[in-house]
Length: 199
Image 1 (cartoon, rainbow, N blue to C red):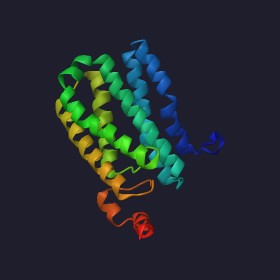
Image 2 (cartoon, rainbow, N blue to C red):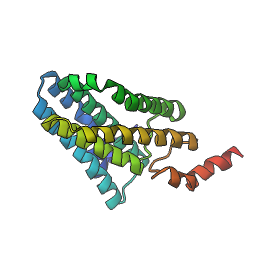
Image 3 (tube, one colour):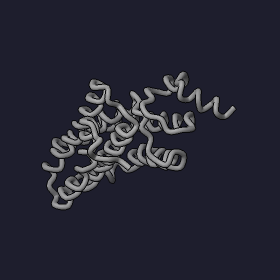
């Protein structure tokens, strides 16, 4: 169980994203599009800040990685719900493409919970690129309207990132954090320990 008094500064930025979810839900309920978008932008911004602080101050931890991932996933889901509430016609028109990217994402989450009992926190390069593209597309859309080339990029990168995440889940028998990529995983000592424990 996490103890709030033991949170470091990077953890608090991650925790903000989790704590902001009820506020975002209320803003959706009252149909406050601009306020919702500004609060969503702040949440996306804290994602960049907490990772930078954790690396700069060398305060990375398993708890921090897990909290960061939970905050990322909840913020991403709220962004999608925001689009569903404020731009339902866009969602309907592009439901097939959105499903192609989102259904594998749900599958990846399910596999992780079955295998590890919690969400992954690999934080791959592809995941970071995907998160940035998603954030830019959603925020820009909610403020100004859709940019379709960015939407297509978001779908493709998101799908590739999900495939990589699923591959990594099958490569690691135990939960690990901060796996930069599939290529990084091939030589990761933590994976080697899993293989040795099997033999």
